[in-house]
Each structure stands twice: as C-alpha cells, then as structure tokens.
Length: 420
Image (spheres, rainbow, N blue to C red):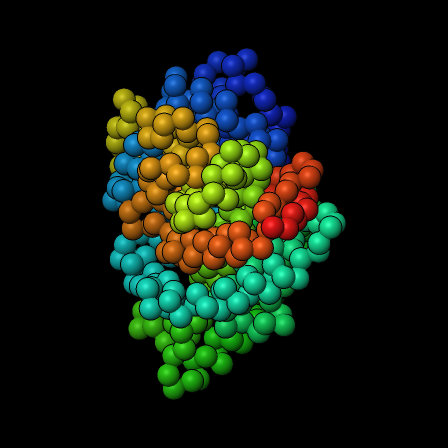
C-alpha cells in the first residue's frame, strides 16, 4: 500500500539460501514469492539467525524477525515498535504520503479505528451473513460446468468485490472499480497492473474523487448508515477527515485492500491446499463440520499478508540482538506461521489442526486485523455452499502467483468442477 512500491527494482535473487553467508540471506524478494521459493530462506533464518539484520537490500537495511514468539513480542509492544513510519517493508515516497490508521500509533490509531469497528461487530456480521450466502450461491450456481476456468477471477475476486461493495455501500454496478483500485494500491510499474508512477497516482486520485462524492452524500444524511463511509463521515473523531484528502485516501486504501486481498487469496489458497493434500479433502468430505477449523488452517497455511513492518522508537533487545532506535523491523508472519515451535509439522496442511486459530495472519495487539471475522465468515459460507454442490473443485493446471513481497496471492488458478 506504499507509494515506494513504484520505485523498487528487483535484483537477481538467490534461490538457494544455503549458498551465501547467513548475513546475506534475503527473504524479502517478490521473485521468491512468485516461485513459492521463500520457505528455505525463512527456515534457515529461524534456525540460524531468527532476529536477522540485512545491511543491503532494495528496501534499505532492515531486521527480519522470523520466529513466532519474537514476532508476537514485537506486535504486542507498540510503545517500543511504532507503526507510524509505515506498515510494509517499503518506505513511503515523501511527495505522496497516504496516512492510515493502521500506520498510526495511539491515540490517533485508536479513535480512527473505533469509528469503523462496528462494521465488523457481531450485530453487523449477523446481518451480513444472509447477504453473503445469497451472493455465494449465485456465484457458484453461475460457474461453468465441464470446462476449465480461472477460479481467481470467477470466484475469489467476484465474491470479495461484492462484499466490498456491500461494506462501503458502493454502487453495485461500479464494483469492479474496487478490485482495480485494490490492485493499483498494491502494485507498481512492471507488475502488469500499471505502467508508470504517474498512472498509479492518477488512478488512486480517481478513487479519492469518487469516494469524496460518496462522503458528502453520506454526511448530508441526518442519520449514519451501517456502511464504512457513513461511519467515517459521522464519527466524532473522523467527520473532518475528508478535509485531509491524503489521509482519507490512505484509509480507503487500507479498507479496500484489507477487505479484498486477504480474503481473495485465502479463497484461492484453500482450493490449492486441498488439492495438494487429497487426504485432507477426503477428511472434509467425510465431515463438513470441520469447515470452521479448516478456515483458520487455510489462513495460517496461506498467510495472505506476508509481513508487517515496525520502526523501533528506542534501543531495545530482541533475541540477543540490539535493535537501535530508528531501525526498520519486519515481522514475517509467513515465517511465524511455519515455526515448528508454534505448530507441529508446520508445513503440512491439516484441516483439524488443534491450534489452527493460533495463526498470526491477522497480527496481534492493537493492530490486529479489524475485519478478521468478516473474512472468516466469507470463507466459511463459501465452503459450506461448495460442499453442498461439488465433490471436488479440481485444480487442473499450475497456479500463477503474485510477484509481490507484501501480498502472497494468485492471479490464476485453473480448475474444473466435479459434481456430487
């Protein structure tokens, strides 16, 4: 979600981390994630140097924190490790900063998050579930039979885009713009999404203009609605946010990407995981009651956001290393979710894993993902309806992954449906 995405040029990556000294191991490369080749890098770091300083990288010097309990320590101590300098490994461009509440420290973080938190509250979730189920059923019933299609486009993107339109009360006929803006927010030139820094900025400003129109429309209503824009426009601490357009844009990007990429890539990741682990798929057929626990295991196994970044506010010690004030600290959730000290046989996909819900994909502490229950509900409802209709969603070709160090996801997943 950072503008500096546009300026990072990938250098040739080392695919085998054991060919270089430990101090040169660099897991933060999009090419590794595109090839799904990051795992040995994180394994070596966990085993040999779990709090690892890399002096030279495309993102400047930074610390990699790769073990579960160390990551949790950083995430839980916001008074030591600040979010205010950004939440990703990228550094924001000075001339296009987009503040957002996840990249703020208390008290500003707390008041802005509080304004939109009701959208993911129990009452609103209960009201949303029938709508989600209706839309899931419509999407599944319209899928092609007896032919190969891209699951990412037909299901993962379509379902999450419809959900985003609902959460924002965004014009349903314009909902494809939300997917486009999410992709633009997380990608730069060379990604195939946009061709230049200028094109990316122009599209994000179009997003801002459209949502500013919606803000004024919602603010003029005497009573706030239950959508995110109404909550911001009527919130005591956020009702003047529209006068700070880059902050408004930053929070829009946060809510759009948070509501889109994480669920979208877990939807595709779950289909792939079950196909790669046929015994687990059979376990699911035998007992669909495992779906809620399976949802947690999918999110652990996929880890759709690979990391979060913090900046040390003071000199501190972690894992026997001294981290200096001002240092960039990257918490690799994707590594913590594969830490054998936290999960038995962590590289296995096990749908009845007893502690699947202990995954760290949503983070910990004050910045824990606000929409985690919304995403879990979409996945649960989707798999409940899939199991009513199909004996298998069969992957029939190689997935195409995102070439991205922040978003771990897919652009293509060719499948065929096998009816019950």
